[in-house]
Amino acid sequence: MEKENKIILVDEKDNQIGVGYKNKVHKEGKLHRAFSIFIFNSKGELLLQKRNKAKYHSGGLWTNTCCSHPLPNESVKEASKRRLKEEMGIICDLEEIHSFVYKKKFDNGLTEYEYDHVLIGKSDADPKINEKEAEDWKWVNVNSLKKDLENNPEKYTYWLRISLNDILSKI
Image: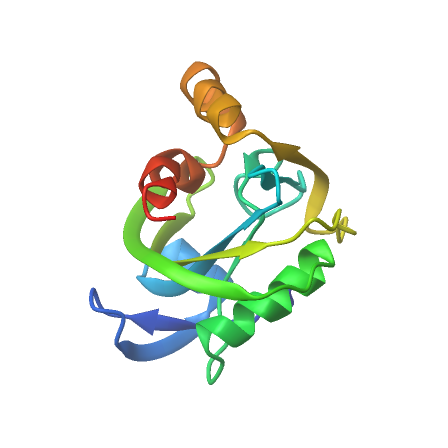
């Protein structure tokens, strides 16, 4: 599990304007740099993880392969490769395809206000999950996922629900 790390505060154009402690940034709802990774296999299936119930928000929900924040003085590319290996035990090439800003206040008082860089990769390896981060995983057919997102949105993270169609249109 990530220790209490500092994360990068940014403006609406992703220019760094400072750093802050992760928990404090989420309590205060400050815009910060983040990334989301989507790994596809050779069948075109997407690797999802189920977030550990103990996560500081969205615990127990299904989401994309991996999400996190780069550390100060760490590029999005470096951070994404590091966290993909730490959380899911996967090493593969990643390509940034998109970015977007979103803001979501959670029931526990935390707010995600992220400038989110989206990266995709390809791998047929089954993950070796870090159980402090993820409690389960599965490969899913994208069309089945889209249908389930419509029928059961409460099973999925907010950022996956709002971004999947846009991301799929860019690959």
